[in-house]
Length: 462
Image (cartoon, rainbow, N blue to C red; front, side):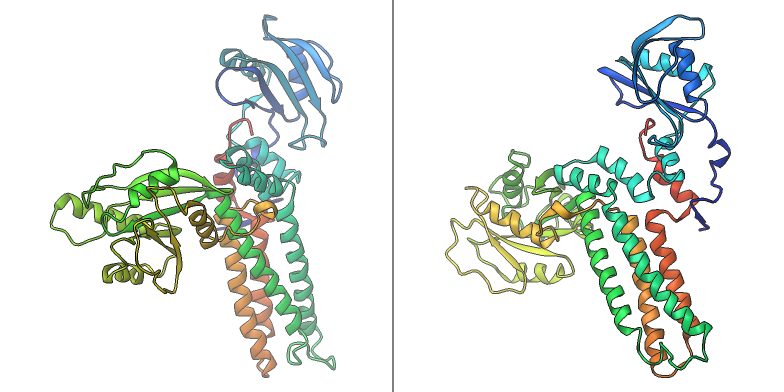
């Protein structure tokens, strides 16, 4: 994949000088609808529709007219001169009534006057290319629009305000200073002190690695807050998985009977636990069976379990924790597991002493549910106050993981150099690659097809 600086030519660079237009408000009918123009002819086109001069940053009441001088709508025009606009270009917003026909007609009139229809996300793309925001902030615009919980919305706003970008910038500065020391040691080998061999860089490298590790952990948490978590309810038949799903969802979603093996397929429902959107997945009871339909249910259950961020292993505590439950716990120990001892109102046995998180509940009586939610939040890494979390994506996690991987290799060369090996060039190269990966988070280095994928997922008017 070819990496480009954001200042290099991109696949859409040839039409970056066009004036673009799109409806900026959501589809459907509303009291107000906005048509946005951006580009060198934005003001000229808007003034031709309004038949008025539009002063900067002032609301001008006008009729919007087509090329035949027929009035389309009456509304307000707002002109934002470059570079003090969202895109960094000349921008005009025509704010009229929110009927689809009206808005489409206004857009058509703008196209006739010289604009072209914007691609999805092209306004945000231009803001990125014009240094009005970096890539994490541009992605935060889409995340803020798509947020499904208040916590996700708050974290997206923090990324939009630059919280994530500032953390990356501080890490970039520290990495740059470290590279300067290494390059100086290579460029001036006749100096009295060999920084690599003497171990003078060890403390700085330790601080750099620690900061990266902390940022990676927070980024994973931010991605989880943005994307939500998949939590699967699994266990033996008749342990009360469906009852627990109904209890957590607050509705009778799954069929509950006394007959073991009632659930034959997976059933999903989204709930909010704290600030996190959680997809709860009820599954068929895990057991050996000759029933073809139930066998397929068990197969699907195991497939969903492998896709889970966390597992609620539900046990019938009235029947007691048995050998089969122990085997399931061992089988899924590679996943974050919360052992849920259901039917605690009927239990007479002691809580088993196991090396995993344990929670007692009664789904029937809705007892212990708050404690279950708290322990589940801790299990999936959302136990801390989400107020300081910034929005992140898996792409950011991948970039930071690659950065960490190159730093780990750099540490190996640094250790080898302290033992007398000649390895400065290898150390410098790993540090350069680490910084390049880190730059990919904010888009200082970004692949052309990556930018297309990111901005292509935006709304047309953004």
